Image (cartoon, rainbow, N blue to C red; front, side, top):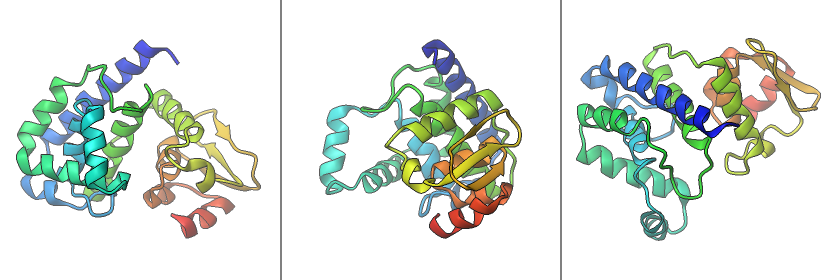
Length: 210
């Protein structure tokens, strides 16, 4: 995947999300997101950290969290959400939209995955629609399926994914799941909310593990 193209996609998605966030009201920011225990405010704070996290800072956070990656991420997001209000976080998201920096140990496509998925983590609980661009979403989905970080290989073992809005499919299992690529991306990253837009014999199976 061309690095400059990925950076361009990520910049556009960050700026688009910032525009989306401009329209939220105060109470929206305290709405629970698709990430269990995280508010919309927490998720946006997390997104601003992705271009600011250093390796020493990450190691320190892991020590404090006793090796629990999710706890480390949650604690960092909550601290930042406490320090910065919505308008400040939106400004920070715009300021670093074109940044080439990414979190330690992450791959070039991870920032794109983050903004695409977290955009849905925010929009769906608010009852709002945030479209996911086809080419970018397929690239993110391919990356998630190939990366050991997201746990998709175990989660989707025996499941064949088929996009209904793109000429794309992956997997050789007998349990097929059909749906928009954006919903398949949510399923691949462990979000049960993706089940609302899919069908097929594999959907019931995934519903038991997500």
